[in-house]
Amino acid sequence: MVLFKLINTLRNKNCVFKGAVIIWCLNIHLISTHTEKFPTALTIKEDEFNKEKVYDTHKTQDSGELEVFYPTNEWQTLKPGQAVPAGLHVRLNLQTGQREAKLGEEEGVKYWTHKQRPKMNKQSVLFTTKKLIQALKKFKGGTDDPLKIISGQAEESQSSPFYPVDNLKRDMKMINFLVETDVQIMRKLLSQFNSTSSTVDQRVTALLELEYLVHQVDNAQNLLSMGGMKLVIDALNSTDVRLQESAAFVLGSAASSNPLVQDQALEGGALQKLFTLLAASHPVSVKKKALFALACLLHHVPFAQSHFVKIGGVQVLGELFQEQGADNLRVRIITMLYDMITEKELILQTGIDAVPNSSHQEYLQQYNEVSLQPILAEQGWCSLVPELLGSPEHDGREKALRTLLAMMPHCQTQYQQNPTLITSLSTLQKEYRKHFLTEETLGEKDGYFGEILALLDSLIMKTH
Ligand SMILES: *[C@@H]1O[C@H](CO)[C@@H](O)[C@H](O)[C@H]1NC(C)=O
Ligand SMILES: *[C@@H]1O[C@H](CO)[C@@H](O)[C@H](O)[C@H]1NC(C)=O
Ligand SMILES: *[C@@H]1O[C@H](CO)[C@@H](O)[C@H](O)[C@H]1NC(C)=O
Image (cartoon, rainbow, N blue to C red; front, side, top):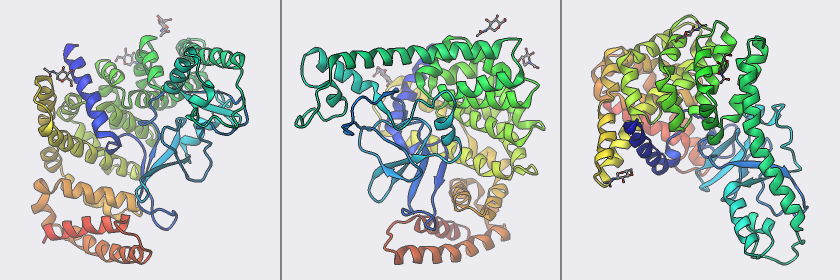
């Protein structure tokens, strides 16, 4: 346990300084020029960055000055410090350096239309915890209008409508009420899930509601303290595929960047059960969620990554990669492997600059013990990864190219002797040179296609 604590401290630290670089178990889309205004934009689901507690409450004035973000289907620029509800797609516009957000297409929409949460509508405002505390402090000190402080408008006091203290008290009560409600709802959902008199439908519904709630770090930890983790892990080997799928979904969302949850889930034997889901003849929908949960459990836990490799994880993923009908899992598998390779490299690189510290050393040592590339090479991935170059999506090809490069030290000879690979690389080079020229004509410097072309050039140079 002591070791786990040390690891957690380090892991948290690493999370912070690596910031937005790590996008492991979030959805990543690179957007092509054809459909979007900003071709070099990285889109992720706003989970990792949305650690602050966000509460909704009724809008009590019409000033429109609060830092509220109203998502639509269009990309909108986020102001610094603006509260963003979970489930939105957020991207970094690499041209302006600003973050932008919109409603998600698939899972994102669910968070907004989920039946427990229709409170969140245009009449709602979002407060972050930090701002509330700030406001309360100033309020106690008797200065300024608290809501204006919340909205960061305290300095511009002209034309500010007076905000009655009673209203503030009412809001605070409501916020406390909402905090309690999350815990209460979770209790209710867990007992609905755990009850022998619940139908499978009711149990699945309970899991999906929980999945929504555990995106918030505190709620994920509530799940642990309420004994829910054990129930969720047990459901992974339930006989009903819908329960398996939803349980894996809850597990992944709760574990996402949450070291406490990761440790408890690993100690509770989740890894082995996810393996079973990935290996046996389960529906693709189950495997998709199991893969998601696996990536979230392993992210930043080198100790678990070594274990994963030792118990045959690479082989399980290899079989999955080659399975009929698992095409849409392939990009996810490669992304997960690539992220694991680069996570280690990043940590080891930044580790060199860090102050020597024995527990830090131990963490680095654990990363040193994760040896993924040799095993990937040994198990045929030097020829599996190139298969993804045939993907119709830019994103899939890009992932394949990056992974091919990352595996170069172990695969170079095999690449050089693979005529299919050599041919597809030069075909793609021609194609992306054209895209790149178009991009340049449009005045786009350092664009997405330029990046892909650079990957291709580098690969072609090393395979000749
Ligand atoms: C689930 O039900 C079992 C048996 O009824 C009980 O022992 C256990 O405490 C329950 N777990 C939770 C988290 O409610
Ligand atoms: C799931 O596995 C646990 C042990 O890991 C076992 O106790 C339980 O009965 C299994 N559940 C089902 C439905 O097979
Ligand atoms: C080592 O690093 C950890 C985490 O960053 C920190 O808590 C601890 O105080 C450090 N120890 C020393 C001796 O600097």
